[in-house]
Amino acid sequence: MWFAFPPGVERIVVEQQPFEAQGKDELGRDCFNAPAHFAPRILALKGFAAAGGPVEPLPGAVMAKEPEDEAAISAMAKQAEADAIEIRGLREDAVAKTAALGAVTAERDQLKAALTTAELKIAALEADLEDKPAAPAPAPKK
Image 1 (cartoon, rainbow, N blue to C red):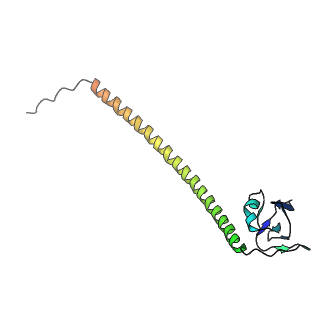
Image 2 (cartoon, rainbow, N blue to C red; image 1 turned 120 degrees about the vertical axis):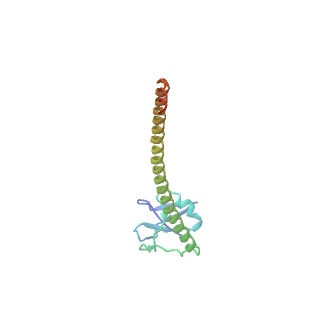
Image 3 (cartoon, rainbow, N blue to C red; image 1 turned 30 degrees about the horizontal axis):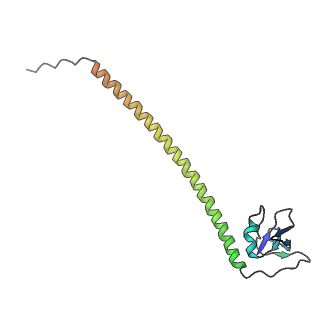
């Protein structure tokens, strides 16, 4: 599997196996070929990534034959990128939903305050009615 070095890095040792740049990918990054079972260890290192596109050999570099499972690893890398994009979208949706929830909560709080104010006014009006003497009954009409 092809891996890209981060800028400024030319060599790496994984499980006592040294690797150095053997070519450049489409993005112009120095790349090296390592067994696929090293992928989790290499990709966990800061700045290391799967090579982007075909790798052009450096002058004098001995190019190793691609492992048979390169296609499967490439497919997994593409799926991981697609998953990362989906996760970003879900996070953006969550932020939007949180903002909408905040707006609804603020509106609910305003309505609660308005209801409390209205209930207090009704209670005051009822108290005023109780304090006033009852008006005499109207005289019957003849």
